[in-house]
Picture 1: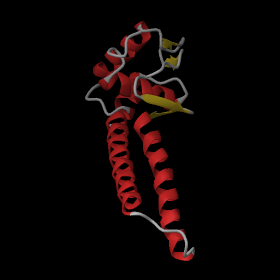
Picture 2: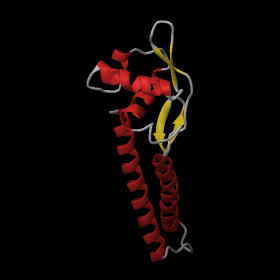
Picture 3: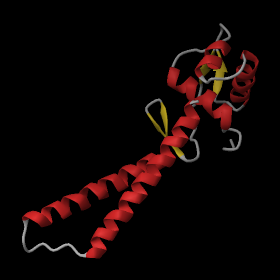
Picture 4: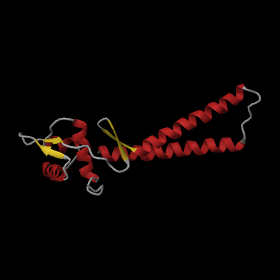
Length: 144
């Protein structure tokens, strides 16, 4: 299956069905994935069924058949999280450690902080913020 097929509204519908973890109908999907009409929801559900990711039950509702990998995202339980969020958390940890070292330098007289370390701390903060903003924007795009 190509990642190009699992993008945009189709990806939003798929993520909604996975999050719900129950059989869903077209009107549920229309409301849950913020689509314009039941026919649009139905078209995306059929597309996901043809891709082998969903199947219809005997009542005509759609259920998850397979949880697929999505480029640039990671499944955390039933939630699709952009990988950029994890990069942000890595830089957040590095930034916290750098701040702790700077604070420690005020308590330990022989520990001197060089200007290059302060520059590194600033760059870590910038990377953390950029990855966090991009991750949040991707997450919002998926949920709206």
